[in-house]
Image (cartoon, rainbow, N blue to C red):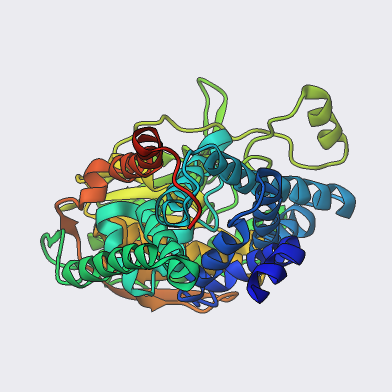
Length: 503
């Protein structure tokens, strides 16, 4: 009774506080066990409340989570993007409000499902509804999959489900555990037995999956070197820095005569590819003479179409070109009317659009192994990465997380890259401008990593893999289907027996 009164009188405040604590479950804090506890608290806050109050509390939870979990957007937009504090703050606030609205929609959706019995709500409706909304948030209007619940479990026991169910499947499991905790705390005997059954099935599945290997090593390991230039964002694109940047990457790469594969970060050379053609040609010749492959990020321009691309170029032993497909709004393209674009031009702010690459592109092919390329935050969109599988034996991501300064964003980004490796059963080779550069194995474990905000060479062995995990073959379809079933079950039961009473 005391708990009920507290939840009723301080519901919105508790929701805000719980949401604000949610990022503690993610990198760099990695308190993975906290995530289901916080969602159990949110489910309790939803329990027995009118629809409007449920939606308000869900909105508050989302608002708190994205304020503390994505505050670094302000650093990118203001500190490095150059927008005035009121404008930058307004853009960040708008995004946070939109993300919180997804949570309110989750609550409203669940309120529409017949059957208000606590067991049905906590063990079916609320977890399934959240997972569907999380999936929707990951692609609607370009998508913003940050703080998807499953990512928090990369270092927890539920991570073994990732190759089978993907990140959204792991999210569903976390939420089912949260629901089970609620019914074990305040449910009837029947509900508690159902909660114990759910937990038992998840625990049993986790033990079984821990022994499985979905993909197999293919060929010999490659010796790889990931080059981190350590160039700060405020200096990177200055014209006077081009020569010194070229000299830095020349010095670092010439010293690497042993690796089979060398990877430079996103837009490593701050110029268009045709403007530094002689420089690139010299490195291509050096790499061929050494029987090496170099993959580097650079901007490119198509003279026949006038299109600019954020690209990944392979030279030396093997050749290929990949154009980034999933662009960053207000970073690489500006979805604004022409008059606003003119204002940006007059304020000497970026206004020129980068063009997206074709949706279907081939892997980059080096001798003996194909690489699945992604640029910047493309690696957080797992479904798009699947298009390169199972042909590709290694995953490659180049990025420039200098945009986010010394914040939690680079750590969150690394965590999502680790999840891609685990989902696909492939090594991930991640080269970034200022960190976090890392070699990640097929189980999502960081094998080698460099320090942030400095020059670094991350070297080691990377084993190519063949085959495909169930998630790589089927994607999110099984999980989405399971969520629909969980939402429909209460509807079917309510029609057969009448709407179940509250537990």
